[in-house]
Image (cartoon, one colour):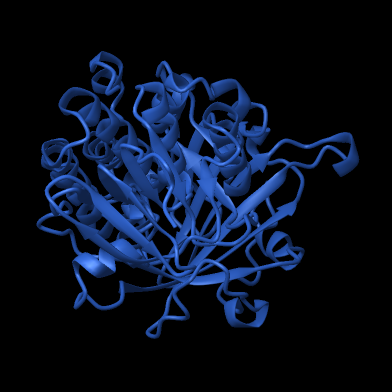
Length: 417
């Protein structure tokens, strides 16, 4: 079975990258269809951060107000020692002079806004569920997708937006093997908890050898919640063996302790917050080595399918969103052609490879590594005696440039689409 008309762009995967690509193509007058393997859409994941480079693109799609209504606008990213000692605070988004905010939001809320908007603008059947790709074929003029339900369809281009375990990538690189484990395991959860540090701060503390935490609010408080916001937390710990590599594995509190026991700052009882969480997710921190190429004729990759990275710069979703917008601009200029994919890869390939490698070696939380190492893991009297402020600021500024969201570059560059 095949649709009566063939769209320009076949999108494999209905996640953040795929839906952003669909909306961007529609905005540019490019016909598209999304195919999602899951038979139903369920809310997955926990918190996510949309940095200004991602928010610029989503704002150009007219989604800023919808997202802001469900999110927390982040004012500050604050780093603390394991003992609750302040290290450095970095103003974020509009509070740092950007034209766009940084939003902290539940991944399910972001996904719902994108999905609802795709269905509103492109039609109720724009996202076809229960279509798992088993094979892709192509010739000089078109791509054919084959699905496990016996259906197939044709289009001018096929874009693999199907995540770190991408079926499209597996066809292009059948011998690649599983993602690479970093040696760090992660537990995540979200719980209604009293606001801390003004209610709009993202907290990063500790270090992975003894237990690192990242904590931030992702939904505003309501009268029904007693005014308590929904707080997202991530707990990271070095561990020699990786757990299952998926986003839905259930974690156990007993596996986290004692690394995260007795963590209580003046302004936040971290241990109490973790213990109050009903559902804990567990998965390894993984990525893949950058590829030499993503595009093969009329097929290419996008987002985590192309460049999965450690979640150490709040940047994975943002890079997928930027991919989608830049690719749309290439298709708009060059048509639904292999040349458009080559142009897209020529820019986004090297840019995202730099982010993947920087997330391994020198992400923003390298600040915590330096403080922990140089202080010998002990409390300090003055942070300036451990690491100079200029060095800490340099780590933050370098990452913004690598990831493509330093303020002036972002403000002055033309729109991708």
